[in-house]
Image (cartoon, rainbow, N blue to C red):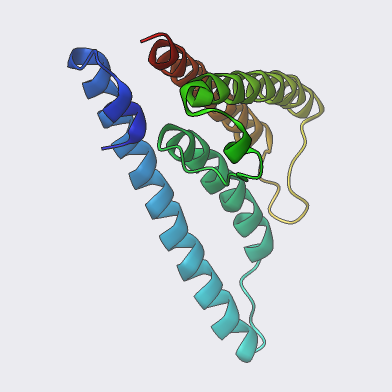
Length: 170
C-alpha cells in the first residue's frame, strides 16, 4: 500500500481506482525495464560478433524516457523522492505537516509547468514530424505520454498537499 493510500481517509472507489492504476503503471514499467534488459543483452552479444542491434540506442532512449515518466507518479504517491533534511531539525514538530504541504504545493506547481511545456513541445514535435534518426520512430507520442504522466504527478502532489493540510489542521 502506498503512502497516498495510507493517508487517504476516503477509501472506496477512489482508492480502488488508484490501486488499479498503480498496478498498471508498475506492470508497464517492469515490462519496459525487462525489454530494456533484453535489448541491451542482444546488443552487447551482437557487438561481440560485429552485429549490433540496429537502432538499439534509439529504442533504449525512448524506453528510458517512458520508464522514467511511468515511475514519476508512483514514486510521488509513495513519497519516495530524494529528500534533504538539513532544515528539518529547525522546524517545530507541529509545523511538519505544514512544511510538507508547502513542499507538495511546490512540487505540484513545478510538475504543472513541466506538463504544460511538454504538451506544447509534443504539439511542435507532431507538427514538424520529428522522428528518430535511424528507425524513423515518431517522437510525438512519447512527448505526449511524458506530459500526461507529469500532469498525473501534479494531481498526486495536489492530493498530497490536501492531505498534509488536513493533517496540520487536525
